[in-house]
Image (cartoon, rainbow, N blue to C red):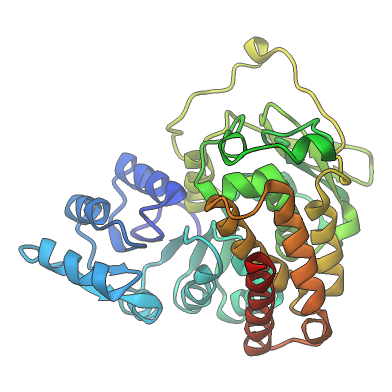
Length: 387
Ligand code: MG
């Protein structure tokens, strides 16, 4: 499949990547079949009135009931809940689906989209972190193209084009380093929620901004890359690059390195996932390297940010270990956002809860087993926090 999509579904349309996906749809007048959102009824009503999708799904029944009343004068159908999302994906059968749902909740919609669409533009990284092998196999079984939207993976995807996979030596996965780059473990003890929410280069949702500050996000991106590109975790080198201009690079056996550069803008990544291998007019600004003048690089401090190496450990354990890391991290970050635990306690909770769930998680293979291990890790994390 190539070229411009005839229509799209946007899952998680009220979030950060979701609204930027709708910017792309608006700019290129792409019809929208389906929108799904969490609980922001006012924003979803505005989106539904503008794009007039066939179906809109809200995360819970209360939000869906309010939206139904608000959209009573339109032909838009309103569904609710996780089952509603999967049913709607099947019903509207868009050729392209953008999945920008946050967290574990995005996994079932990913699998539903892979079974019914021709292409899935995947922004929900948890789908690959939790069930990477199952997701990749489902894409293969149903002949659905899976194109990453995450900026680093979009970059790697582009750098791999036209080259043989067996010629890849390493993937250089770039990281902004977050707001605490250069901090020692002792300095990190004193950081506040407001400090952690201040990301240097990317404007994103709260959860991923905290994950960037702890470097958990980069750990998840290592796991994503292992599944998407069929490489070993040991072939992925994380490289701190403060300017977020090089979005990642691929090193080949002949010593050549191919990198992808752009002004950081998620709309570029969404547009590429929809149009590739062709390219469509960009919405953001063009790169002015002479003005930027300098690009810098450094190795990450894995001692101060232990979740990066813990993610590599998790993917090497296979089974449900990465799913447990994700589940424990969702609990820990939510507690940090409520100012219930400190910044450094996020990694303590994630590592301890994952280790406690390890006996079962190493052996898990089916989706059911993986999700039950993740639930176990979630419970351990909650118990650690309430003490
Ligand atoms: Mg990223």
